[in-house]
Image (cartoon, rainbow, N blue to C red; front, side, top):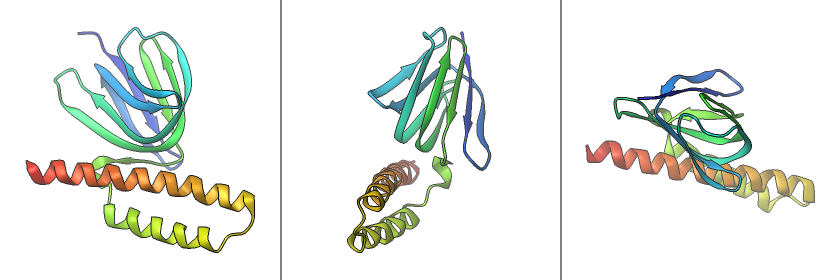
Length: 141
């Protein structure tokens, strides 16, 4: 079976590097599914879950807080400020951070600051949802 090489890199470290049969992630214009041989593409990535399906059918899930995607026929690169393996997501921490950001939004008057906090809130809401989804999957197995 044909594969493509995928690299997921955050500001802190390389999160994933390996071969995949299929990659799915939230693109700027909607969800994207990428198979080997895909047409070259560059897109922004929205906060959400990146799914990597390996040749053997196993899957890796990574939360990305937005970023940039580059697709070549046999390679995918995702650059994200924040990328966290699903197994490392913590819903309680994400919810607490969201509550702090909501409080900051209530106390913010500047339009530029409001936009920054709203973007952070959207990312934290997506992170909490991903953490909840993966904790339910772990507990159902």
